[in-house]
Amino acid sequence: MIILSIDTSGVDCSACVYDSENDTVLGEVTENIGKGHAELLMGIIDDALSKAGLTLNAVERLAVTIGPGSFTGIRVGVAAARGFALSLDVEAVGITTLETLAAYHQRQQPGQPVAVGLDAKRGECYLQIFAADGVPLTEAALVSLEDARQSLVGFDGAIIGSAAPLFAGAETGSGPDHFPIATVARVAATKPAHQPKPAPLYLRGPDARPQSGFALERLSPA
Image (cartoon, rainbow, N blue to C red):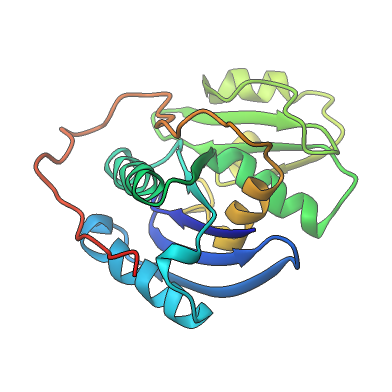
């Protein structure tokens, strides 16, 4: 199955064309842009498809990060994935940033439970715990750092993500959370058919008024 995965949930704007049958990345592009995903996403997708030597019509499934993360960035990615899925008559799958980070870590160090904590500022974090086989043990949640520390007492596994230093008493997190865009496609490849349509997972309202009136440049399937 040819999967097109996109990520606009954080500081990166990324796209990947992935062949799930051969576990092969056919083309990928990642740019660390901070903001402005709506302006660059279509070009990045086009570049990834060009590297793969394919057109949009070859895509059999869309995958997109749905958060938690940048409020506006998440909206851009989800809207693009759902639009492509509709025009191509294929399925779009939403993958959380927490699940993606857990999957990336467990691909590097398999057989270990993992707690993923993302720095949400204001003394809070996004937290989710996964079993050694990647199955979620808790729901994704926005919690105080103190509650997170308490919930991780006695946890026998890896603690990763930008909030990990905060759990140990540091004053600042480790900075933006990055992951290979191919991980999003690999996780999507494990999902059975007939998934719910991607929807943003914010967990907390926006810090600023969301951008209005932005439009994604249209990318032709041919």
